Image (tube, rainbow, N blue to C red; front, side, top):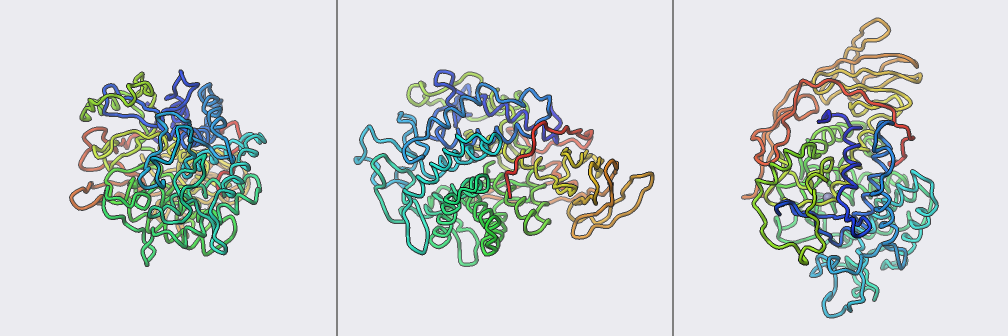
Length: 578
Ligand SMILES: [Zn+2]
């Protein structure tokens, strides 16, 4: 078993898992979904294999491989990654979009809400381009690949997709752009007005996040036009916000408002608006996104659990990643106090919901109520071979507060595996900035090495490799530290959460601080469908929760852990966030 706070070991396991659930009979086409309640657990092909899953996986694999220990066996791409990349590129087609395969298992979801008159108007030859998550996932993958390799193929494909999306968007002079349906078809749009379904303008703006990242990576200004047009229109027309700016709560779990009660839609949108605001210097966008982030936080917990949908008591890892990235961006550009959120979300629910034990996972799935239904399509698009084993290093998609499973929604989704892996990268990559230590994980960069003793005790051992003051964020509420170095020990007081220590290259410092203990009660969900727990904290680490989860219990953390010793990755850090 790996050290639970070793981000590099977690990244290595995540990389392994991201290529472990492929279909050898279909050139390594991934299985996006799996049914944990089938015996044995059964992976299923579905439309999200195409574009969303393939793109997110390539994005995540590119990022996690950039933070591994140099001697890691996962430091170089494996055969599965090459197959996933080939699929990502093969799905690209007309208008530069990523298209769904024309197969029985890729039939669109949500035809009643995301498409006008889906039935009766389409021919068997009609193929679909899912316009929201598939374009988003693929443009994320193309952008990260281009950042890491400089290969012009990825840039050209991204430009082609951006141009295609711009040409197909409905344009409203002076207002912006929108995509009217959830799927574009070979026969074109069948609906040309906004409001086909509540919130679709915001749902279909998902590509804002990779569009602004592609613009930063390449300078391709149409990508900025796409992001700006989509967010301007959605901000004006979405029904997702109440007059006070809080998130429209939906009408209760599973009562519809489909796109509006989907938390990942909301967190992804605020992340995109934030990033566009930062990159373009538009403070009104940053301000709006900061306000929405605060409202979004109210739907989750301070240890990083966020719901799949408004009022749900099971979560979704994709939402944790959005909120970590938003917190990091706010920390970098608005106030360093937001790093406390990133640390709590990352140190707790993100890493705690990564599957580390096959025995424990097998025990948990054996306790789920069995789904005795037949496999879809007679099983020809399914895999039952070693599905659970493939997920070690992957993430519990839909954890509740104290358990990696909740019976409300036990199915597996690989979007969350890619998102979780991306967030592990983010925690490593943005824990430090030069000689500033924002997140107190063990990390190493060319500027410094940090060995963290948390949660056993409040201690960081810092090897400084360049001249200049070292700054360290202490746990929230802690203002005093002792700094040992150069043969003496001195007390230091924090200003706005950070201590500053004069140091020069070659210095070895140890910082000692308190890890205050506290207890907090949490309740999430909706009346009659709530989940609650009491959490016991030590500094910014959630150590245990009551009651203990019944299926795959979370937060049974040891206080008696040695520190993690990091190693400098062999590849340069990627500039993934502004
Ligand atoms: Zn997800």
